[in-house]
Length: 328
Ligand SMILES: Nc1ncnc2c1ncn2[C@@H]1O[C@H](COP(=O)(O)OP(=O)(O)OP(=O)(O)O)[C@@H](O)[C@H]1O
Ligand SMILES: [Mg+2]
Image (cartoon, rainbow, N blue to C red; front, side, top):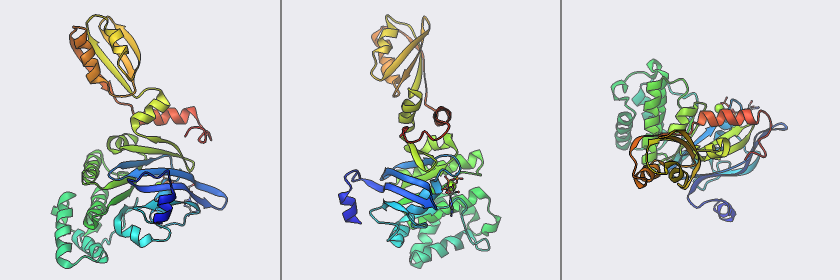
């Protein structure tokens, strides 16, 4: 496997997951069709796409839970097809329906999982107590899981990943079925994992949530990755601009000065002292400096970040069928 990694020139050294022409076929249909991506350590990476696009199948191949038809995927340098146990030991997995023993309590479920991980009793208790605190389930630690809501089950699933000290957390639709508050809390937990250096791969339909937590996303369509990048990058690709910045200020030649900022596309004059511009990055600081340079007064400065929702809608409208090959 390490030999394979070395011969792959496209693989970045820091990539903890690297897919090369990864393919899954059922009969003659490729439900995952020669996809390529690298995920860096500590990155939060989102798999996005409509039902049946191939997200779960991709995840299952990474975990050695379904056979790979062609190509390969390296996970922490291991080949999940041949070394599934090595992968499972280091990777935490939250499936879309988390399975726990309903008649056992939260602590008992974690203790059972921790025992399978080979942890001794003292270490087990220590890690479980810490994990339950992290996911805020301490109060219900001794309640049977049968009484848990979906949000509580999801958090317990994350607790198991924390107990395991997984280097990678793979979360399939982690926030589907959660209420807005539970979703926000869950996304906070994902950010905490990232802050600790855990690489997170998650699949989701909930575009604005994905946007809030993911460093990069891969947009799946009919088994292919149609687009991949940060939300700002995709926005530039699909919408032609990443950010829309509005400036309300006076000063000599302000429109000209705004247009000269690197990364600014088009400056529209809405009124004598109001301008709207598109930019491929957040240019607020430069805009403020431009106003100062013009000896003007800045009254308002706002930026609209690109919305993944808009990118997605625009992309699927622009290429309603097929056109995936030339979009990548
Ligand atoms: N065991 C199987 N046998 C045959 N086809 C399958 C099997 N599992 C999945 N598929 C097909 O593979 C395609 C991709 O499914 P997958 O579950 O990966 O999609 P997904 O992107 O996770 O969708 P969702 O958003 O609904 O979870 C679908 O067309 C599905 O019908
Ligand atoms: Mg799925």
